[in-house]
Length: 519
Image (cartoon, rainbow, N blue to C red; front, side, top):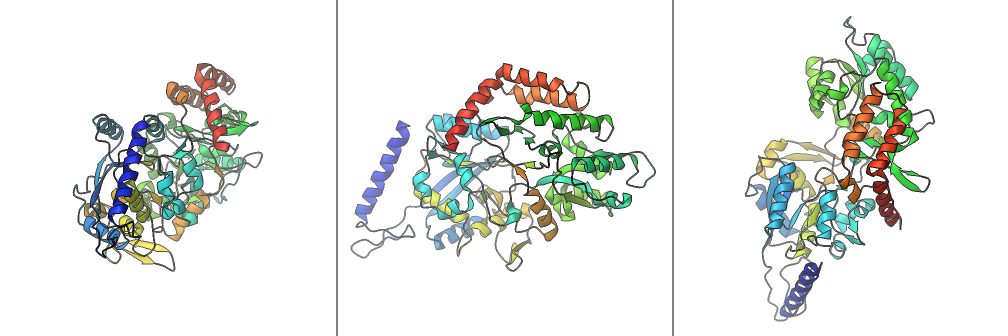
């Protein structure tokens, strides 16, 4: 951190000299500050290099026609002379390129990090602590929930900007739930299920009672693919088990991975029974996601985990394709399914996933103006940037019905990207779904309820040392128990193996971090 302290000192010294040269006066807009002779000092132009984990080939290297409009609006808002240069690459290539830039001394001013990179770069002194800067960023503080800052805090200092959320209820990060073929329910005269027993009966009818009325035995109640973990069932026992992230659950004053709890064993027993009865698509463990979608599109599956946007034909994806095959099909998101003790829920979305975390380099020049720019980018006040950056020009690319709080997009996202608007220039990600209609908003309301919280989002070092415990060990036991290859009691063996093979160390480190966050 010596390099960081030195840099901060230099910045402070530079600011002091600038104040002396300007007659110790300043201006709220950051430019054209008057000196003692009445003249105006010029603001030195600055361009921030930004590197994002995106794959958007339509976005022009020079920022497109949008750049002039964006910089002009920034100037109106009191940010003259601020420019940006965005570079993008997606997936694993992003991490490789970022490491190359860092090793060559060309670290970007502002860039994506995941939770693992964040912890590593903080330890290496590569990132700038943001607390003092954020004190002058009211919009970032307004739209980013307090708990999300906790996940990017190390030794009492904030080192990244998480994803924000607009206040409307339909902007909840959680969009997933259990989707059901409402037309199948209607065909069989059934009501939407509310608990595991009722869901079992619906799955049985969808499998055995010809719900599509085609005279063939060709449907299954519950579908999925090799990444499906049947959140509905685990949520009915009060635990979260999202694919790719096993949740931490509080038990007896400490936290444990949810897949070692007695509740996980109960959920596995339910799934195994349903599988034995033939109510679950038997090929789910080996199916790619696209194959699972094809089952839905071809009306082979009646219930599956999906997204709230799927209830609308305009939502794209599998539902749009389903309607092309069967125009009378109807999908509905149902309320959370209750378990035997009345518990119900769905695992919360990782607030730090999907490129949502962004950090400032310790070497970034004039970080105050950078943070001002980021704060402007999420503002919806006069001359604020959120609508322009996200949707383009009002009247040209979109219209806004204030009474309905509804954005209607006139320009496709592909064309917005080509102009230089939307995701690449959303410098801070803030969930904003003002473009959704009432049907989707109703589904989003369901998706935002009964959320199972993860007690710790930070990755502890031992998890990096023993990655196979979740990726291989748990996956093997999960699949073999659900499909009946192994008895449910083999779950106890899994728990023993987990702790013997590194789980005990993971749990110890996680509880140390958890206790810090509680203080």
